[in-house]
Image (cartoon, rainbow, N blue to C red; front, top):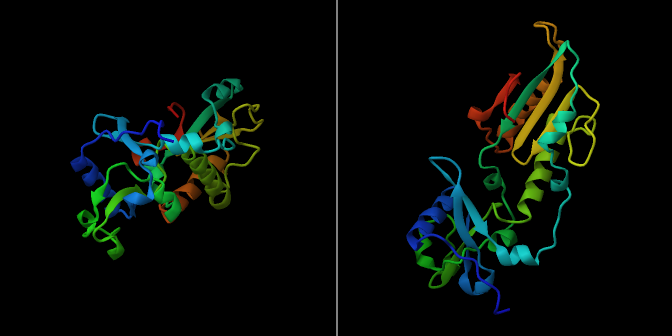
Length: 255
C-alpha cells in the first residue's frame, strides 16, 4: 500500500554507518540488496534515555508489527510486583532476596538469515562501503544494500515473547528453576511456598522466607543453589550477568 507511513531513521548517515559497523564487529550485521525490501517495510531507528552514559537503541518495524499476529503466551504471565503484597511472614521469619540482570539480552540472540533480512534499516549504502566488513559478500559488488540487524531488537513486537520463553526454558532445563510450585505469575495466586521465583525478560529473582534468627537457616538453601547453577550456565551459553546489579542474600533490595 502507498498510504502507509514509513518509519523514520533518527540518525545521520554517518552515525548509522558507525553503528552498523559495530554490529559487524560482533557478527550481528547482514547485508541485503535494497531492491529486495520495499521502502515501506524498511525499519526506522531511534534512541531513548537509559542512563547518563548510554541510550537504548530502538528499531521501529511499525509495518511488520502491524501485519504480524499477536503472540502473548509467556509475556501474559509476567510477574507483577503487587503480587508480593500477599506474602505473610511469621514473627520468626524474614525475607531473603537474590537476583541477576543480564547485559544486552536482546542482542545475544542469533536470529535466522530470513529474520535478519527483515531487520533492514531504511538507509541504503553502496555495497563497497562494507568491503572491509565480515558481512561483505562478493556478489553484492556494484549494488546498493541495506544494513540488517542479525539479532532480536527492542521495538520488535515478537522479541519480548521470544526472550521470555527462551530465558524460562534455559533456567528450567539447565538450572533446575522456574518450577510451577515456585513461580510468581500474573493473574495467578501466589504459590504456597517458602521460595518464590520471578522472571521478567533479562531479570531473574528469588524471594525466600528464612528464619529471622542469625545462624538458624537450613544448610540446604534452594535459592543459593539455583543461582550457583545460573552462574555456571549463563557464560556457557553466551550470556553476561551485570555484576553491578547482582543481589545475593539481601534482606533489603530493589528487584
